[in-house]
Image (cartoon, rainbow, N blue to C red):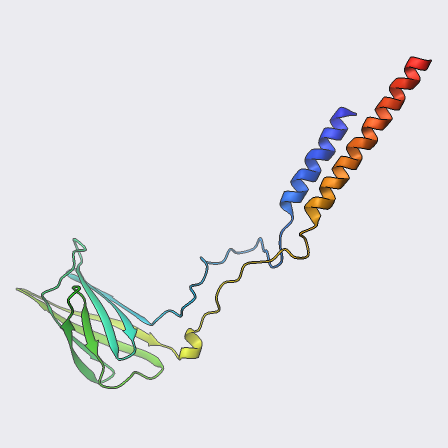
Length: 183
């Protein structure tokens, strides 16, 4: 009888922990929670010499240039971009990055980008693609916490069931023991 009671209590406790909230899925796990702000279009280009990473921000591209081997920022380079028929010379910023101001905003679409890098005695030509999407397509809904509003009472109900079951078992055992004593 003790083993049965212990088994029931353990089963109820584990069942309580296994109950999933609304929207819980054991299928493919989703990526990390989505950020509250939309992701800006990104540009990544690399060669054996350099790595150039850029983000499209309103009036132009914000660029970071690194030495590919050491990943050290390259702050004294001449960076020129050719994108959508525009030839743009990027200006060095105080933080070590570069800013390439666009003459006109890029409409939605995919663009081939070519970057010419001159850094001291080293020069390189990098190519990559920039995918520009509409502001509506970039909008990401903020992640919402799943609510367990429909299941909030379940642990309490299971706890009461366990207590009631324990009382019934205790009462039955006591009655059986009293009958044996009287006999």
